[in-house]
Amino acid sequence: MNTLKYRLAQASTVQWIKGIVAVIIYILFIVWVENFWWLLLTPLFFDAFVTKFVPWNWWKNIKNKTIRSIMGWVDAIVFALVAVYFIFTFLFQNYQIPTSSLEKTLLVGDFLAVSKATYGPRVPMTPLSFPLAQHTMPIIGTKSYIERPQWEYRRLRGLRNVEFGDIVVFNFPAGDTVALRRQNEDYHALVHRYGRERVWSDRNTFGKIVYRPVDRRENYVKRCVGLPGDVFEIRDRQIYINGVQKPQFQHVQHNYFIQTDGTILSPEMLRRLGISNEDFVLFRNGRPDLTMFLGFDENKPVYNLPLTQKMRQTLENVPGIVRIVVEPTELGGEVFPLGADFGWNRDNFGPIYIPKRGDYLELTLENLPIYERIIRVYERNTLEVRNGIIYINNEPTTHYRVRMNYFWMMGDSRHNSLDSRHWGFVPEDHVVGTPMFVWLSLDRDRGWFQGKIRWNRFFRNAGR
Figure 1 (cartoon, rainbow, N blue to C red):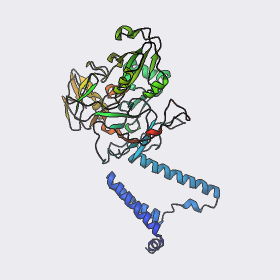
Figure 2: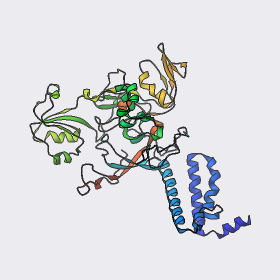
Figure 3: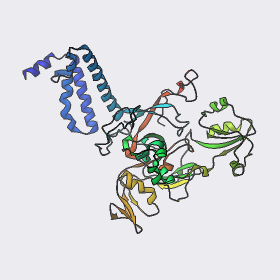
């Protein structure tokens, strides 16, 4: 006791202030995460700043200068990694826009600060992981996480819930299984297209097949266009919620075929329109398959590129433009649920009900393909159909009680987006956060001394 009194008396005012602030922050954090067992570690925080019974800086007494210097770096690196781990887990993280699915709202090359506190951060489901890598270590290419232990999904209190129109970062729901040589493609779509046997046996084409936990799956960013409990529908490229048409978002764009009278559009004009080099395809001698399909001249140049309504109106007044036709629905490929024939496509989809927590879904053989993945994969039940009867966890049933909320996500570049129309619902345990602002933006079409840094996008609001 005398030793304790002595150490308390010897502590400086600065030490006391640091110790009290650290303990208050730690207690507030514990209240937030609602795990009060961590209060047992509170004396350690106080000791680190004030009493110092634990020799936290023991390495500073080492006589060998080289070893002391090395330990100083090790101490700094460990502290930085721990700090980054907690910041990335509970507050925010960086995310780079890799594809054009949200253009022109967010651009390829935008770096986003993503808030995890807005919707409430998830308690780590795969806690033993390297803080700066999503699933693969850079350079060495190994997994950046240890699969065990796996913790159950739990989300801390956030500032608000996901709202219609929010831009949301989430783990790719269909990314539970990945073909390592085709990581940019949906594994389940690959199996549907090529067959499971080939995908698993043809290592040269598809690579090794691996499983990834929920929080280690690839991060995607899309716009929320359907909330739990909504009936979602697309009619002629327009979104309807519960039968009511929603206003078009400002930067929504679709792909168009554009034929000129022989004119080749200049790179400067395309850049002024905001079309990057990878956004368009030019068929200089026409595209014969469009001749009868769209009424194009098979010998005149044809462009295929994405346009907003404003961009389309601009092009209609450009000399040399002969026809502008929206890309036909038939070119959109199959949609969710794969293998089921609902007659839906990317431009005319649904109606489809988006489940919410507590729903008592009526199940039929007709709607089972829509909700099968929710039951079997996201909520981890066994599901079988025997003699026309649905069995969940070996019990015959006609209903299912939903345990999570689900969302419908789509890109603003509607014809260039791999989104819910292709792989279905986004479970709430996959939601990461929402972008706050753009902190860096790099134009992939320009060099460093030719305007590569898009200064006008710095600190632009990215959440809507």
